[in-house]
Length: 245
Image (cartoon, rainbow, N blue to C red; front, side, top):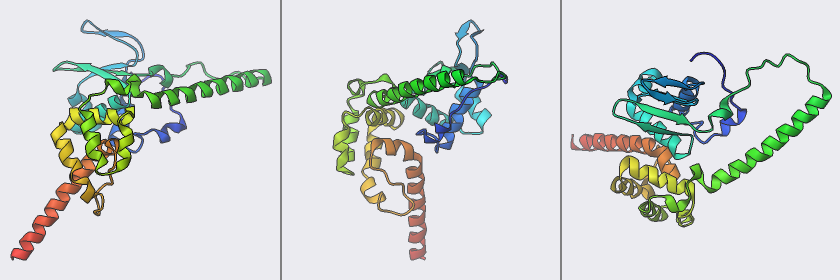
């Protein structure tokens, strides 16, 4: 498991989860520990790019809480980085596009001729053009999921968000925003999400609260919003006690 390499491009700094430390750690932990060859485990075929583990075991390995790992996994599923199936005892995590993180183990010992360099440059250009096209396609259908396949209840979240920022009117058919709505409903429930959205017009103007105007931003900043609300309540209670005294 500790042999071999994975490749990471410098553009990883532009990855949408790069600044989310928990998501970044969970994803790269899976990249580094997933099977690099097909194997069997207790009669189960585990393919390349898959890992059998549990939320608790991963939490122990990373020094995170189980809830933090669960939330990170749901975010990675949201943007199509991985999938998982599971039982009450373990989960099988599958890294999508696993092969893009693998490298040819042949060491580059031979000198490169001018002809080879020209060919390689042309090949790299073609690959980059194809990659850019794939990125544009991903923006249209995130994780291959058209907007028509999203939970229709998510429209209620967008409706509530319109009261926060009218630009959300454009987001009914935007896959990444609808995927965020699906995540929020599955993770927290519709009523709790709408309750939090109801606070945003006020909290967006308050110090130490995150600014949230879209479903995606609500997913990214849910924990920060929760912590800020706890802090605000604690300060309010302290102020009330002082006034009584």
